[in-house]
Amino acid sequence: VLRTCAPTWCLQFPAAFAPTGIEEQLRRETIGASRDRMMRELGDALAAIALTSPIVLCLEDLQWADPLTVDLLRHLGARIRTQKVLVLGTFRPEDLENTNHPLSKSRAEMQVHQECDEAMLAALTPEDLAGYLDLRFRPNDFPPELVQLLAHRTLFPGSSRTANYRYMTCRSYT
Image (tube, rainbow, N blue to C red):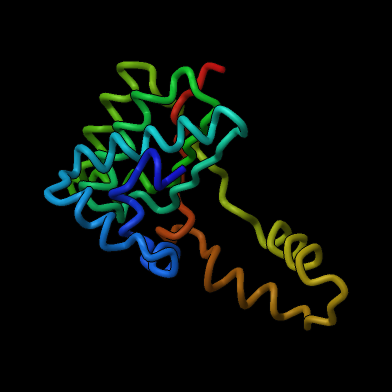
């Protein structure tokens, strides 16, 4: 699908395409490719894949995303209305506001055009963490202090690591 719908993206994965011997051909075909072309091609590739199987694209910690990633998110949000594609992103709103992040403007535009939904995530409790450790590492004989240590380091009340975390989904209507 990438070769057909998104040749500029093939060059981003040289290990996957170098053994096929078409790397030089791809370079010739994509010479002078713009970022707009790359965004369009990725949207085309996702649309082609979504014809046969639903897609979930998860982008975490968008407060650290560069402007090009934010542009891609905005582009995909506008395109996926009729596709079986779910774009799920997580971010901390206070980090966006404190830094004048490009996602702030894009998020507002997507909300105005009803291209995304947003919900606040609740912080994990030490009990949630203990339950996760038991499920993930069953059977285990972790000492009881481990949960408290991890909770103190990762779930500390007021920490920016858990405060006011949100997720955003780009809407798909199919």
